[in-house]
Image (cartoon, rainbow, N blue to C red; front, side):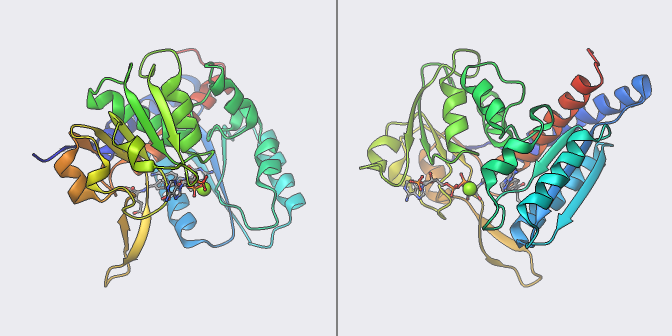
Length: 296
Ligand SMILES: NC(=O)C1=CN([C@@H]2O[C@H](COP(=O)(O)OP(=O)(O)OC[C@H]3O[C@@H](n4cnc5c(N)ncnc54)[C@H](OP(=O)(O)O)[C@@H]3O)[C@@H](O)[C@H]2O)C=CC1
Ligand SMILES: Nc1nc(=O)c2c([nH]1)NC[C@@H]1CN(c3ccc(C(=O)N[C@@H](CCC(=O)O)C(=O)O)cc3)C=[N+]21
Ligand SMILES: [Mg+2]
């Protein structure tokens, strides 16, 4: 039996259409549009392509959007000054500093310098802390996209055994935190695996919902999945290029084999990735409303 495909790309498109209408209404009624700046330091090709996708989406939704590219050798002080400029810029509602940053730049120090009210990635410790106590202003984009896909898949999350492979600050830790909270689309029992986990398969095999964010191509094989599980593949790994130069992407899950075992699974591409970008837009619309005291 083949698993149901959880098409993030389609869900993301629906949400973007709602956001677009919301932006048009804000513009007509209040004369404001959401402003987003994406700061990219250096020339990492994957980062360039993600940032381009974010800018393109912001543009489509009618945002004021700024793409700020900086050289790889930009000093930490100059980056801090740049962020300070956008913190003070009333046209900017959301600031995204694309990660990873070049070596020599203290990522923590940079994330701390972003105004938490403009932190549409929700990576600032204030926003991380608010998430942890169950009172978030902004949800981190990839975990928010995952949760939305899970809710729409119709799989029960409450009481479910959720296993997350990966404990990064941008995916593994926050999704684990969100799904263990008290509340709707949550109340799960969460286990987190990482490279020091003794027996990853022992855990993944027990998962009703398996979320994989390890960054290892096709790490999860069919035999690691419980029959009927819902599998969320966060991994985006470039495994080569097509003849015309397009990136060939694979996930952290061996898709074909997993589809034979799981009840539902996200494809790569077209699964979590497009949801991430759309949640960034959602956070930026929200930030704009807060900054302009718009209540509807
Ligand atoms: N679709 C989307 O929107 C997004 C996709 N991604 C993709 O998701 C993947 C993960 O990203 P990110 O969280 O930033 O990755 P990181 O490299 O920051 O973290 C990977 C995590 O996986 C764990 N891990 C790695 N190998 C194994 C293994 N063999 N067994 C068990 N655990 C392992 C690591 O453990 P340890 O801590 O012990 O090192 C670490 O916690 C990447 O492919 C990335 O491109 C990321 C963000 C958004
Ligand atoms: N400050 C910051 N915020 C981030 O949210 C952030 C980041 N840094 N650094 C890197 C990761 C990675 N990430 C992705 C977003 C979208 C896709 C995505 O849209 N993927 C498409 C394919 C894209 C393609 O074709 O190249 C898909 O899966 O269908 C992937 C990965 C956000 N990240
Ligand atoms: Mg990382």
